[in-house]
Length: 182
Image (cartoon, rainbow, N blue to C red; front, side):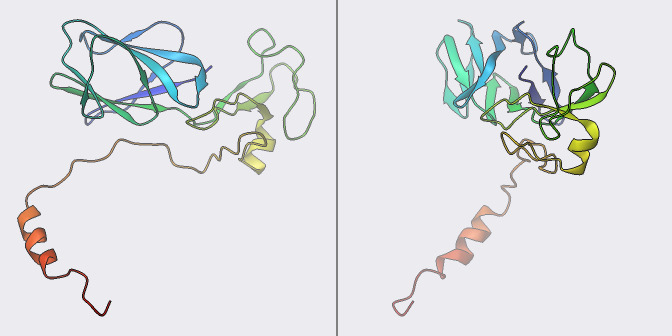
């Protein structure tokens, strides 16, 4: 199952998963994760009639809109970023929850009920879901199928941009154009 992270300004991310639309802080917007994750979209954003909504700075009409990894959504004064949660999931193998006759993707060994496992969540553009024995994943934390690497940093929204010295930078750069001999 695809997992999303919803980032708000200066706050920890909120995980979103499942098939229930997530309402964005009482705004006329709802976010619905796509299953399975698609290369061109993570979720559908439902924009209500009274919404003053923007995606990556562009105004959105009422209706359905696809949301990609690292998209920014503004709803009036509120700002949100949507990202794929690609961190591997550590859990315990349980046949009712996981495939009944499952094997470790690296060792090709049958998984036993109660065994510690890791589930690859994939990359932003592609969900994965392969199962690994935890010991095999820790020995080489790179997915054999999609190439997701546990060492890759989790995506975070960009920080605020300083605007105070724009004129000073502009005046310094005016004299640094290309010269005829360059």
